[in-house]
Image (cartoon, rainbow over all chains, first blue to last red; front, side, top):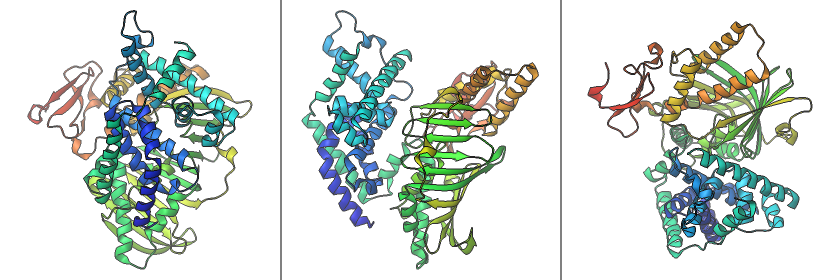
Length: 169
Length: 395
């Protein structure tokens, strides 16, 4: 593909999916710095993998790119010194509930960023994007029953990851 | 927390609206990317590349691939290397043979198969078969002679775990150089290779301690043989065939009936200094308080040989549990050593651990200078770490 064609295709796909990417990355990051970094990684990967974004399944592929970019941004942020407060899983009486939920959301986001690609895609589509199983199945190229199984497995893994994150303290 | 509360939190995250300033941030990120695109190959994009776990090798590959492209342009009329790259990068499946050689490590040879997305199968005649699935984060080793399966669950997978899927890693490196125009290449002429009339290119990037040779078919433009040297290890790929039909069952992660299964875990995230120190600690605990003779890949062999001897000296046949425990120790012990490899030539690395015993607080085992730092980090025999300026370094 010529460079000019590549640029044109990239711009077209970026314009088409700009709102979707902004929404998904914001939900995953929940933090402006993380979001900006994840967006940069996403755009870079889109550019690198533009050939794969030409077909009908571009949306599904973009999901994977966005989730991978988000994971990378989290890894850079958290490193080995990330601190997760075990108390967040069961806030102490009197602790400000809104603050606790905000912090809990941050912990959950980090755990989502650590999930294997397909599981994180399943959980994001089901609960963050709130798609039904038919839509998830279409994106994951599987049956609705398999989509349900992916989501269920992802939930179990996510809970395991959360437990591990708190154990690290 | 019960399931419903957990789901509520996820849904609450999903219902959060995107603030206006975040939309502006998205636009700004997009504009910044456009600026980088206009000066592709200049510092902006390099900065993005350098954040990745395989940054140094990838950056070197950028230069290599760019140089290869530039060489084709320079020499004119010959096979377009961009076409060679495109076919390589777009391959859905591939079969190939890999040979890895290097001083201090046993040479390794295997037949490989690759299939999108991110799956690889490797096998040796009469030896185990290894199936890697990066999407699932699983590395499955099947040992038919013993009817045993080892399932390695890989946690915190990076985007480019090159050790696991070498085909994907080579492809990733080459892909990064498609639009750059650096050059440092020697045209090797044409020759017959594996029944193909080929044209060869040699690229040497001394600064990155990496060189590569590629031979491509003159007619089909497909790579026939590829050789990349990274540090002390040379990876050669030959007998390459693209887009061949490969049955899905070849990449199945299901355990064959009658196999005994063992489960292991490995943290795949980029190791940091603390992981290296933990590797030294595990080494010392299992190696009678010593440290590796050399700080390179031969350290793994040294460790394994000693452990095998220890098992033999016990005079008792090790149980499956013993072997599994040892394998997990080896996995944990090797986790930190790639940190040393990632430091690069400017780190002024110096290893003196061979003569030091665990606990000797005044004897350094390793020193290095972190990237961009004026001072050194020194790890001592008691595994404490101190900073020192160049003139404070132990003699």
